[in-house]
Amino acid sequence: MLQPRILIPVAAACVFLALALFIASGRSFAFDRSIVLLFREAGDPSMPIGPAWLREAVRDVTAFGSTVGLGMMTIAAGLTLWFCRHRHLAVGLALTVIGATAVSTVLKILIGRDRPDIVEHAALTFTASFPSGHAFLSAVTLLSIAGFVGLAARRDDITRLCLGLAWAMIVMIGVSRIYLGVHWPTDVIGGWCLGIAWSSLSVALLGRWMARAEGLEPARDDRAR
Image (cartoon, rainbow, N blue to C red; front, side, top):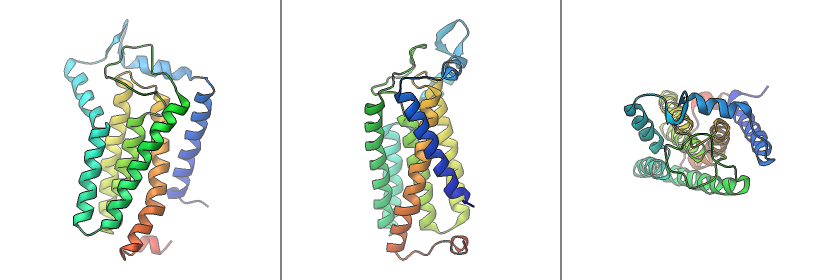
């Protein structure tokens, strides 16, 4: 029987592939439209629900998932690993995020899905819609940071803390893209699924390879499996 750490990324990859093929064929999901409109004032789709301070707060949250925001997180985590003498892991983290950024760009070009056109966008956009780059790259970056830091720390409690914080940010960033009207829900779901698969594969293969290169032993519960 497959373990959750294998089953979850495999299932996520399958969901992403199914969504990508469905959307690339030109078809759409009815619930996409309904969910986008849930975040808009009744009778005025140009206005997101909630007070002005909420809209500003959501824009602040979505900025964490930008290239600049995630880039700064990657640099901070990479330099921390580097100065803590985990230089292989630092390089592995950088390669993971850079590779995901390139893949995100290529997928957007190949699939070419239009952004939501039923509401006014509350943030600027410059690329195609599927998959959501903010959702995909935030999942890759934050889950990979958690995984690589966990490998360096060799402590399950630190790994769980990093994963919990990572998922809180990932969910908020993804929902913010729908709230701002710049992504369909399936763009965000697809980005999350691909991010889970990408980061899991990177930590399992590249991360553990880099850890072994540094002479780090796997956690005790991993050796027992």
